[in-house]
Figure 1: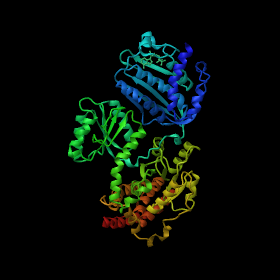
Figure 2 (figure 1 turned 60 degrees about the horizontal axis):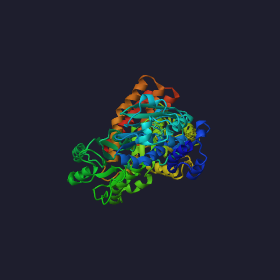
Figure 3 (figure 1 turned 90 degrees about the horizontal axis):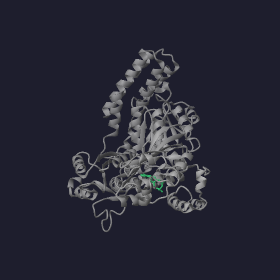
Figure 4 (figure 1 turned 180 degrees about the horizontal axis):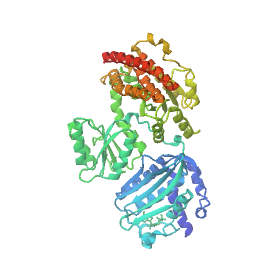
Length: 626
Ligand code: ADP
């Protein structure tokens, strides 16, 4: 009897082995023949420790039960909170087994409503994360007097359960044991007639991001406006988090009427690019809503993606005939949704590209799918670099100091970091040290130093700090692209460029320099896209609007006799001026910076007066160019 039950139970577990793609399935199936319940009971079963993708484990559970939830008319929601790191180390197979059992039970004992599998972050340490995993249903619930013994082998809530639902009473016992082996405790909260929630907390070591099924390069989804239409609030939240992570701009509606209102209201000013329509909604369902959208010429261009349960679009009800651009089966995997959005929206982008093939957009391919983190505190420099990067299709996120950069690197994976050296809060050297320490041997993100010091040896200092290469400011498009190509093409380990010093002539030559070097601003011309606001005019406006504050900061530092503040303020203004090609002003800043660094402010008044003069001349020249 017991043997038969164990065999039946094993068959249940067998099922989840088939979908476990992390491990060699044959090996596991083979191992199963010697699978021994008593071994688990005695705690003599070994756990595996391997890099895995939590998202894949969770999505596999969702996929496994998609059909069954649909048949029962339930909503199955599998969600990982956006701040949960998903590259982990542990035993994905055993974790999958526990989730399979809990979700399987939840579906089995729920007749209407929803089953949710949620993962959230409780604590984040340097090299580990503590996660809470919760499986919740709106099912029959479990009476308090039965709750305590549920986890004992062969126990069921009551005998009528066995008659009605079958089962072995082993699943929870095994799950409890496995969770304990992984260092956690299963807890239950339940009310009869309301539902049950099983939860446990586990600490995982952080794994290598290489184990992630996909590193999402969201270049093409950024700024895309999406309307999420679903009557289920949890589903809306899950989708909302997913699309936000890709840089999309979401809004939601809880029914078809509200959705139509939002679509129409937006149509005149900022129309939505795409809508995600849930199929099962009261009143008007997803297909009905799609029909209404297609019947309204004002909403013509929007892409429609239907999220539906298995088998709902049967027969000749193809997505195309229904006026849809795509249909996805729920629960939708994040990777599927992403691919679908790219495909559906990609058509439009390809057409746009063909139309402007002769424009600089043609070169946008170069950076496509490449994610760059720019760490730079100077707003003008930021803008210049962003223009350059976006002109070649790179996706760029900007952080203003090292601390922010470290946070950003925890949230996402970047292909390359452009790192200013001097920044408030945490400078580029210290930030790089933290990044390298975190990465260890598991990963090596190329870090390119952006340094304003036209000094020999600066490059070596950057390399010694763990950076890979060096770009002297003001950066030029050609130098930037060449460096990016070198590091991104060659993978994580390229060769640093030879010392490319110095863009600024020695200070004593400054009198012969032009007030404005026209070549510098002219180099931004190539970034200009047809029909878009004039890049050079924008940069000049940005520089001029910042100028009074920057000069005031300098003046204040001088009045306070604060040498280090002076050095910093002069350094920032030097960067901005150099980006405009205002070389003489940049030189005056450099000299002020050097004074500040030396801590000796003798002669600072004269120098500041000279700077003000140079700035006034540069300003005049810039205004003429606008
Ligand atoms: P079984 O194979 O019988 O499902 P389990 O150990 O997985 O064995 O579950 C033991 C018992 O706990 C079930 O028979 C059922 O009475 C109760 N149970 C488990 N999960 C739930 C749930 N989500 N809702 C209601 N009852 C549940």
